[in-house]
Image (spheres, rainbow, N blue to C red):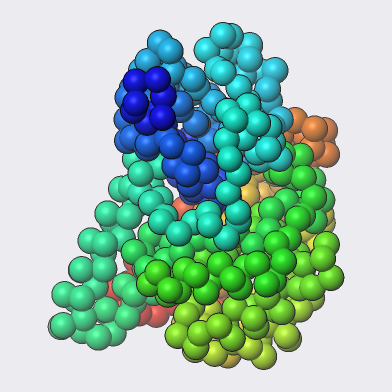
Length: 420
């Protein structure tokens, strides 16, 4: 306790609501501080210690991070300590120091947790004790609202199912893509860092090479969470399909051990690299049983093989499509989330049309469509033939409209209308 006999208070927030790695990082900080006699509050203006998790993936998320920090600076108590963490804190310390001189008490990136613990003289907590009382709804207003929307949609699904089981099942499919917001879902990190070398991505610069948690350690945490009533597990990694390459194992082995714990549990997989996933696809398919795998975030990034080559994604569109068909041949109820990037340097009209055609060939249950932006230090930032911002916006809108129309058609009619 402090000198007055009261616990110090802390506040956490995400600059972007959607990065599962940041969610897990903040859950760790929440449990770490709570175990060191801090009390969490839901308003920055009431906190003695404030942590803002930042994102550097795109220019838009970088701008959002700067805006969030600026907002916190205006509302925090004079003597409150503001800490910036997340990927931007790892890669852009100098920029942030210039923007917020004497206003930020420290910068701690994803690889600097130990330095944070030492700075505030905290007692470390073991990995198996990190996420027992998950409260992701308090980390960000948008995250909290998404949890509310999930609950409301679940109630609508129950009402609709009373009149039409088919319509109810279509709504249930949509809910599967947002399973992280379900009350019984447990978010668990299985690895951090990346084994890839994508030319556009700065995340590896911030989070480093892949570091996998031992299978036994992950399984132990799953068992402990099951005892607390959790039944669905969101397996988070920056590069899930590369799990185990650093410790002599692989992701099918991890899944087999998790499924052996309890026959009724289910999982969702986050940030799955297609080329590495397909390398072990047969092993994965052998363990798939209906209901075990709920959702796969299977990031394709582009519909053109030429663009994928320049991105160093190491998979082809044809192989990607065939892998999804193979997955759905075993369990058609597994939902697929993905990302598409528009405006990659040199992206021609023909190459963009490949993105449009991809939506004719695959039904994505959820799709994030993002505009490419140069990231400092990445190979793609040096490529010629940049696409103008206006063209990127127009291409993003066209894809979003097409995907939204396909989703609406599915919800209303129940037909995904795919082409061979």
